[in-house]
Image 1 (spheres, one colour):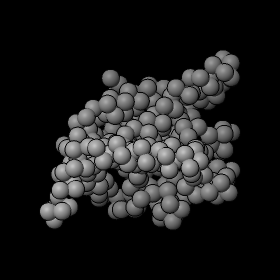
Image 2 (cartoon, rainbow, N blue to C red):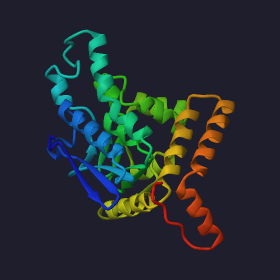
Image 3 (cartoon, rainbow, N blue to C red):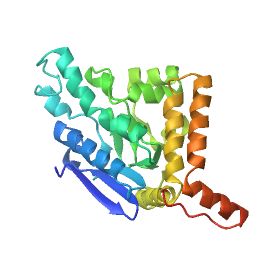
Length: 266
């Protein structure tokens, strides 16, 4: 597998590191393909109970590889039909869907710049921990693009349509504290403590009721595009299903016995 993405484990936590530091982890086709394959494998591995995504070096990801686009890649040079280009891009965007939908928690550790598609991918994670040195921008308009990797869908649900349009139209750069004020990140921590803080959060999630987390995520994903009444039905179905797990039964006994529960994903 390509070394543009590194994967390590820490107990039940998988850590996916974008690894093109010389380009602030700009995402080229090789990296995007590897990101998806690594995330897909982690999603299917029952030993991985939480997935962290971060970047190597000074950036989380500067987005798409603009230098490659300028030389004709990613339809920057107009090659091929619009439909075939859209089909190829849509396949690459699967990394965002997987981070957003996989039935286990995903956490982005934003160590530096998160721009364009890099910001979109970070927004697709369930939670985001940002270094106090992180910087954010939608960036697309600055290079004449409209946006991809789910950023418009995700951002307007976090900050509202008007603010999301402003962030996309103006493409201003903002810091981690502003991202926290906007509700884009879960917390901001000192740069040197980023991975320690993120891994502490990830380990807590990994030791929690991951089967229930998966159904919680399903409720949110389903509810984002369905009616309140239909979502109540989905919640009821997931509630009954989670109540039939061994994790729930063990946790209920632990509650009665006034002790901490242990979750095993069964």
